[in-house]
Image (tube, rainbow, N blue to C red; front, side, top):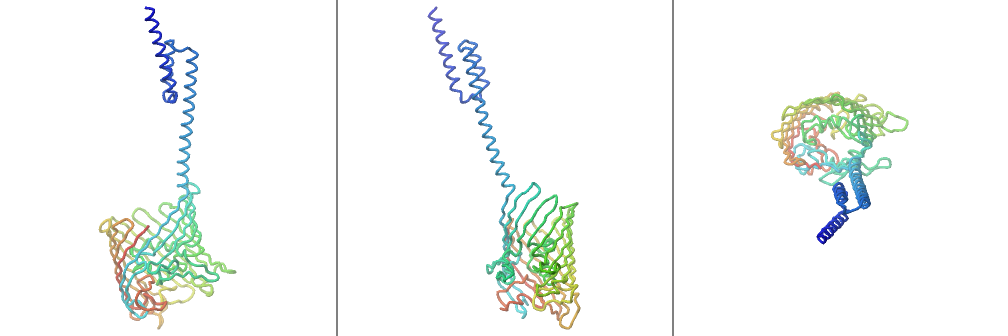
Length: 468
């Protein structure tokens, strides 16, 4: 009997030692099983396998291991959270975007030179101005973002870059002693953007007139038989300070009940004459549900520094108003533009589509989505010559009809076909073109008169545009 007792006691001791060994071996996992370990130690103490002193020592060890493990885990979590937050903050506060669009195609048209020759070949930027740009933005505050924009025009026919690269296939980048190269001809500016306070643009950039001309023209083929060609003819769309301007300060207010105020000034910067070459712009946009309208007034001084009169006094005043209404698959628009030369009488140019003239322009059109990927557009443009009629310069009205189909098989791709016809008076003396000053592959070889004539014109354009 005594022997059996000794055996049982010895067995109990072995079991206790095994439990202690297990407890010690589990020390690396005591944090997750801290409560279970305490229960186990209390059981060993109750059975008399360990003493109170051993119980206290083991329990203290378990607590220390748990605290260390918990601290390390907290540090890891905090460190990982800081890394994630830092990356998110960097992504949120600093962004760089490379973007652009390119279009090319084929055209064929009649009476397309000063000698009334037909022209055909590869078209340059038929769908819209080719461009490549870089935006660098940084979030200064949750509601304030600073942005630098650099954007250039380029030709797919010749590879020319910068101002006039799409007009005549060669860039005007030579520069002179006081004029630098015009590589970033579309935009080179700094912006401060805020939903609460509005947007400020400083540098070379588009005016409100540029935005409105694009937004309210039903023709989706902007450079062929559309409002841009008419605007160049009458003087309310050009790169000479009307739709884009150097040394521009432009402010667009935040939206208030659908209305946005837009104003700007383009400084002349001529010594001893603050007004010389300085232009002013004032207008706004309003949008409510399916209705939208816009208005712009511009006081522009066109010409070079060598022309004191045109640079000192306003010689191109523009009032542009337009509206559009969206109804299911159809968008209808209409607008009216008054251009005046209040300084002196300046008739339509007889050799190129340019100048500050007196004219009223009516335009209207519609865009209809046949399917989500296929749309039809049609528009009518009517220019009324309001300049004094003379024997050598008269009857320069233009009536232009244009229509086209656009297929968008992919989000960033447009395939299109367009037809336009411009009607002139028999004795018209002003040069007009339904193209945006392209240099045709066939026809005259001189540097002026490309795609411009005083006769009726009609043409067909097909091509593709890709946006990235």
